[in-house]
Length: 149
Image (cartoon, rainbow, N blue to C red; front, side):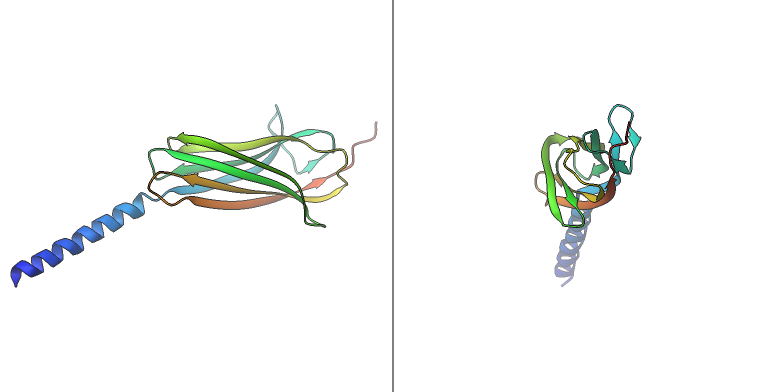
């Protein structure tokens, strides 16, 4: 009987240790900020002017594996009509964990009318032997008329 109890205790302890190890090894994907910049100056903006170039950006941190591949999908939508105006997607090779930035430089079309728009994003992190992790976010911004000269 003592031998059976020791065997059960060993199996239970091994299961607990394995469970704890796999929970610690789960991929972590933590957003750190969503920004729109004027390229070259990194001046953050809340309003954009049609015809000008901007950099739509998401800062994030990944961990939980020795090497993690990431990808993003960015979208820009006009909030009043829910019309999707632009979509950008990009994948990156596996790299060590750390803090990263995924961004897209984009010239706002001159056809965009003044109003409220939404920059939405989805980030996905993948590592061999682990389920992928996805996080999403968004930020609203204004499109304003070009200033008169």
